[in-house]
Image 1 (tube, rainbow, N blue to C red):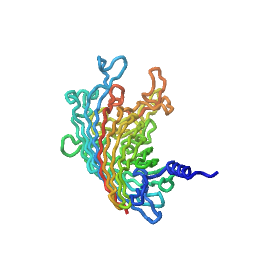
Image 2: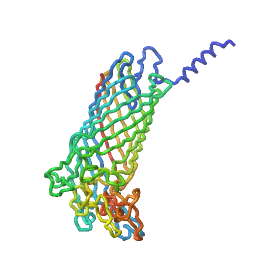
Image 3: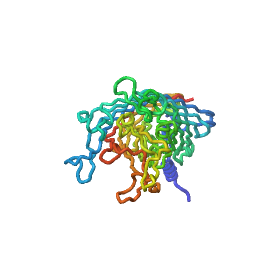
Image 4: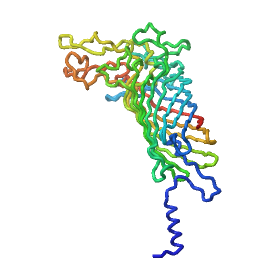
Length: 477
């Protein structure tokens, strides 16, 4: 059947409108064409691609973070407004925590093949300063920090030594499985894996409140305060897995992604050293938390000039973060780890044996476990929002500027359980882990310290706010 010329024109217009364009195309030949790069968040450098056989991006940036939080402690006092009816209240003001960190970020992305890149990252800590200050008059009540012997766990104000150096370097692979600029019918989907290698001196709990040389006591020998340095590195081997997917609609490119961080302590860190072995059976938790992050964001590209390789990009994102239970360097790491209180300095037995009379005694053939300041913390969630602006000034250079804020959920940071019920005990290995009727409930957890881990004595972190500012420049070969 023959169509009228107007009908043919209508069909052609409908097809043109229905097609999904991957950029806002010019309507006249004289207008500039838009860049065909993917979103900044899904960008992967290339090699052996069309007339561009090799890509190398070198980035130098600066990141500044400010962390503020309130430290509280539970109370056992049976008084109105404190603790009644078996309920333990978290009402005791302890300290205001402050941490300021300055980082020089150095990175390189090397194209290996089409949409496949080798990625290097080296964050250099220029300054990491932490302190505890007064929280609504908390310094006027030092008895809140006394242990049962009357010794203070720590004092407020408290100052940690200012640390600097290299924590870790990372090597990874980024791969864009699909690329909208190669096939406009598909979104851009990038995945990546990154290995982190802690190379700096391991963190050691230290007290620099006096303003002189920091006191970094050796948990196994308190008289030796000179052999341990404050350190700077978390001393971890880490594995990061990530994925992000985006699709461009004209001037807008929404995206969503997920990443997870798994960390494994080095043997020379206080996680697994001789002062605190990592292979003790009673420990319920011996590794840091697993951190998962879900990201939802959108890039806006209000201006582009393809012939000049220029464009302006605004990136807005929100993130939901979950941190699983685990052992970590918490806000009280330095304060508790450098404490001289007898209840923290006395080592715990790593195992128990039968005393031959139906009871248990410490197994002296096994190494004792000393307290290093690393504590078991409960799981918590967090929410963050970030904004970033990227200006690509030309074919070989671009600049980025941004900032954000993060809010952590309140959580307990001294949360070790006294017994490990996952190990079947015998009458000789159960130690104090049994009910009054004699029923065995597990084997003792040597990372448990009653003075900080018992409900009514535990510490928590509340009202955590983390601000961040970042700026960077990238040279693209």
